[in-house]
Image (cartoon, rainbow, N blue to C red):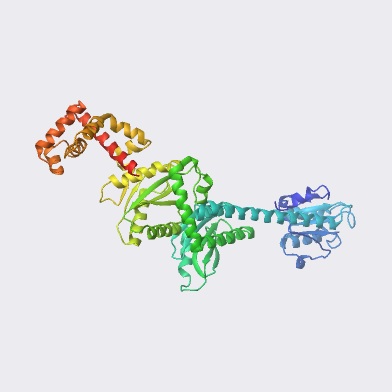
Length: 517
């Protein structure tokens, strides 16, 4: 808390009284200085509490007004007049001048020496400095915890809140890595301007800092350098210019960003192995997983996530490295684990199907091959395995020509799997298809009843079309379907019965996927 004239006057040990210039009582005192000169202005720079015994202030109202006027023009914080040496009370001319000019006038009682006032001011200023340093240290610790728990996005958000500003981090090409605050568009334009004007070339370390103001506020852009190269630019924007303590926090954030962006390859590889292990543990154990492990990778315990299942990625190691690079540039928190020829990626649920489609397109371009992906529905992070199963189902059962299949667009599939356990799916399938499964298990036939029913339903109950697909005679197909109707004791001409059978068949297909996984 800054030391104001009002606060100093409330110090009962000093006994000071505010007798004039009350409207300026909230002026901040930056120093206390005893000066016995008729014109003390050459020895003050602004913000001082000027103390005098009254010798140089003159005896007339005009002289006293001129004296106070000089102090006001020099931006003194206040005038303290001793009442035990020259005057027994603050002269009326001084008080009136203080009221007219808005300069606070303090009456100093005879027992209070100027040195006591000076010590009180110094003590308060020192305490303020200590408090300011402690605030900076506390905020620095918050920034460090933020980047450990949530990576670059959480660091940028924490910095923005700490200094009450908007913040944007871009890479050296001007691409957005992280954003915080309402003034992001204007701030981004400034950051890109600085990034675009920076000299290019290998081995040229670009330590840049640009500060400027316009009608919208004050802006600061600082380069983020890694291994002798400028890797990005941090820009902050605020209504007024940042204070020195706030600029220290910005510099600290730049240092943390440099460390984060410049992690050695061995650290990155170790982190990726841990990321894979945590993803696997999350899928296998869910609620039993230590939430601290998730925080390390940027996920809160109450976060909601979506799973992406990627296939056709080619060799897994290069694909994982490309994904890690893409997400690092965008500061996206993620978990990733391979399984056979499929890569599973878990991201926060605010990433839409459009974002996933763009990600898959970019990844495919970098890998030089077309990719396919399935996107699961949003789930609590401890239930990420549900979204992963849905992503797998969407990938395997969705149209082959669709690059990204959203599970929520699959209609009945979504109804079957969302919130359904494998036991429930098994029950849904067994209730209707159980007699057919039992018959197929005990009778050897080139065309089992389940396969015949699936093809018949797929072709809207057209015998000939289903027979053509399966490569059998239409009479064989008709006999198979007659047996289905006999075993199920259902009217296969009923649309309602066909719908129930179709759901049961799809439940069985999805259950097969779960068992294979």
